[in-house]
Image 1 (cartoon, helix red, strand yellow):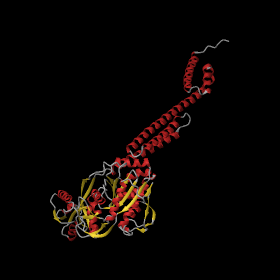
Image 2: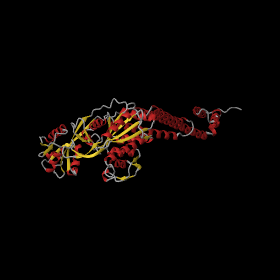
Image 3: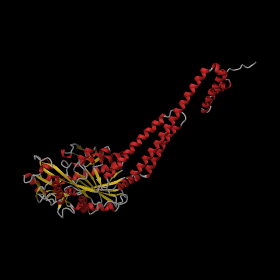
Image 4: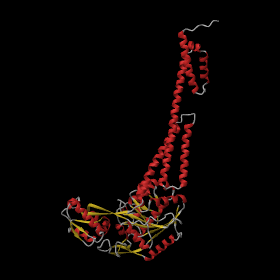
Length: 562
């Protein structure tokens, strides 16, 4: 049969169709021949193009449209793959930054860091596995990766904050004396500019250079020299203000507590209208101590204020912690705040209350206790009311053993019932328990024992897993309310050593004894104040206990903290 000749129009259509078929075959190739049905369809078109022109033109359009959709979906899947792999890469980068921050913080042993690194690698492996699989939408893996990254970013941020806060707490190297100007509470003066015509009562017997510095600063502020009347003691100075001989007095703010002891309602009868702060360097002899090997002592000073920790103030809590890191023995020695002792380098052989030593700086208190117990005290840790509350609350409370059952007085800051035996305290309750001395038998002596009980409870909690969970919150919360001359490296060494060994500690508590008396105190210079005369037998016993700890003995009767 003779083959029908095609017209030019039909010939052009055929050529166009073949071109489209070849293009479609190329697309089919990109699918690697997985769709057999489409392969047969294109084979049919290729070998019988006339049939497709006459009957399957609309079917071809449908097939081409479906193929286009498949191609679009493939592109979307490829985009999702890129997004998933990008998230995995970002997760890996953040994990590296997190590990670097842990190394910089330098508180965890190498073993702990290794475990954390393995966990991070496993988490990254999970993310990669979900994004490299051939089937499924992989959305779960992306959500998982985002969650891990957010968690790591938040943790890295707080590690950075903890590092900065630890730097603020450690390395204390100065003290601050606040010199103030006080007038009677009903005086018209509100600021120092209102006192140009006033007479100022001063005394140069104690902290004379600081008083002169304050006078010079006031002269500069007022643009003239103020009138001063000199007195022989702090008490004479305060009495002159009360009697109207002077309209204002200049003194160290730290003496306020002494004035309250001598004059009833002193703080309610005066107002402070000016303050001049003097910053002084502290001698730091603690740098050479190897805290992981050497036995060392820390003076724990609890100051009776809520304000800046650097400010010189009376020390209401006076505890010396002697620590042997090799035997894991801790000796807590409490000295009553009213102990009648000499303040080396300050009182010139005269005696004063131990609490008054804090007015001249934490270093003065350390020298006083070093001389009393014949031992070196290289470190100090100062805490105020705020820091104790926040530390206990961050730890979720503390269990404290009380020798007595009693109800705290309003002066403690919180009226509450204390049971004999174990008590679980929050921060405010622990502070009230530590401050109470009116409603307990033994007064200040028993208060010192109660303070030791709180510290023992804190040590137990801090070497438990609760410390690891809450360490960051504790460090950040007490920044500005705790100060120590222990360096950041020394603190980190102690933490790492405890985490590495995980050993229990033996805690032995002892309190210096004495008898009540009334004597003239160096820092006051007026009438006699209540003091406690030291019991030399108890002092000698404490000296012996310190020697035994330094010599590596474990003290019988110690409480176990683990």
